[in-house]
Length: 112
Image (spheres, rainbow, N blue to C red):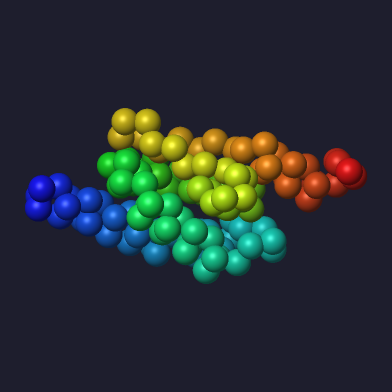
């Protein structure tokens, strides 16, 4: 059990350090609707809340995270805008219906 706990902590630290290293790219990718600091906190919270995300490859996790950043969506929050979903050792980005609505409103293609 101690080994599993240590692995989970190590995985969390690795992904968190990857998020920290990606901050310049996150800042460039995010629209004005969300700050880089808030997005980073949301992503680190998602890592902490879902142990299966810690088993994903850093490349797949960063790719999914950057998809959310480019769309300006908050992943794995109660808002239901987007989700970082672990499938085995791969992390997939999935947009929620609330995220689709938000993106459409910001694009100006939907009025009400």
